[in-house]
Length: 321
Image 1 (tube, rainbow, N blue to C red):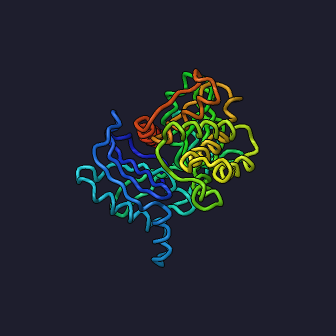
Image 2 (image 1 turned 60 degrees about the vertical axis):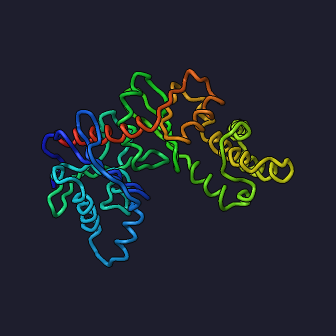
């Protein structure tokens, strides 16, 4: 099977296939403008379960057939465009497992693995790998990082912060990413706020002045270490100090975010935060609470969306040579 495709076309189809979501977009190559597309909740986890229940033996064919069915629902004019698939599609529960690429990752995507597959209907699909470091792995965020690299390069060295269920801190030096760290901040918050002894002491609510003050205190306390003892303080705030459960909710969030970003106080260079709301605001507050604001650069949903598409395009160009 060839690992190269013909010259990149004027349009391509972006396939962002995560653990819990699936999204297709028809993208104009020159402008990265989305012309058509849709998404659903048929993430890799769901499709994998359906494959196992089906009794079929060929995982790759099953996934490619699912992808082809979804492609058939796009406008006919886009039916022959190449597809760039990133995220969990190349994982052990995806359509075909690709080995993790090793660091460093270059700004144009060199270093990442890609493989061309074909559906029975003739669609060409570029499947992209994840990346591994000395003590962490990721699939998906590396494509966003490649797409962001042009913004980061002028800073020389620094950190790209991508919050999420498993937040990523990617350390860059000029034109390449040299290492990264994963933090389970989002998952820990979900578990602690809904399934632990702390669940009865917290409640989601409006981020008003009291909640904001509680969040900032949580950031400072979380960045100081001894996180396990600090976490039980949420219960103390409820039982002994009679703090509101909404304030405690944001205090808990602050503890975990502060514990995550506290190490950036001693890092070199700028910190680039790229996230959607409301996470972006919370992380921005946490960063501004702990480090010099002159080091912080903040970008929102539009840049994050464009980064994924630009990253996929760079890999399409890389594998189209």
